[in-house]
Image (cartoon, rainbow, N blue to C red):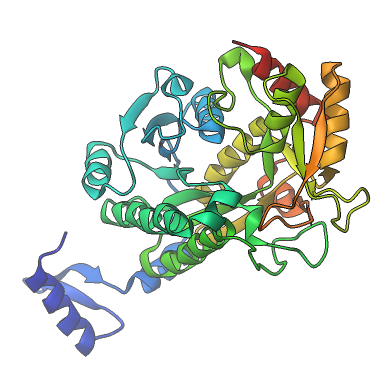
Length: 375
């Protein structure tokens, strides 16, 4: 960090020479001081070599999507450090990977992990993610998803880490005008969860220009599935709020029935339609995003989905087929903040990053079922 006098002197120097200046030692220039945006323009014009990403900090890496991504990172030869408070993550999900127990609200803990390690990039999963809870307690979501996220970005800037892959959400779109949803579709979130994800995306855009922190924001659609043979899946000890685990709980008899929230949406069968993507496909999108940041600066946004939507009743029917069990169900009132129909156009991600989904709905439900049945 520069001291206050040095910063003051630099301000005075820029006031007299706003385009930059040379520092001269005994008649010879020692170095040039330039505005950061000017430096970035020169850097890109000169085609300076891009640094390969080797070491990655994964916030929330002990969680459901985070732990699958950590597994793929390790398989690809990356060095990984996980930063997680384990409020929803599982210690066993990261195996022998270095785990730093910490919270993004704790700047001291963040500074410590950045000073100890020389990270090339960050993958940021740590967040509160429940739509219904966000409506009931928006303060928690703005604090955790926005304020704590700013702590992370500030720690990155202060420690020279300039690349981040952000776990965003299709919730930024709200009730879409049309489907499938493109990245340039209007963003009108219908709940605080989506608002906080969109707010952080906007922050990343401005941080790219002001501080040179390049980013990829991945707008997830509905993650599901598991990698049970590696001991990876959603935390079965938690109360499930996502559809597929709740349906499979009913198939196992862990719950008496599955509640279907709303039956009067403007969809073919009256129930909500969503795009379900296998968690491994989602994890692979993060690897592709790191490679994107090795080559390109700026703030980039991509949808991550399959491009096909399934209604709640279609998911239940598919689960009956996979499990061979009847699944009791009943209709309930709509949940606040639930749009009727959301599914993705992910062609931009496929074209620019060379990514594509490898798993279909049956694979998603089958892997979830195997995980759900395991002890």
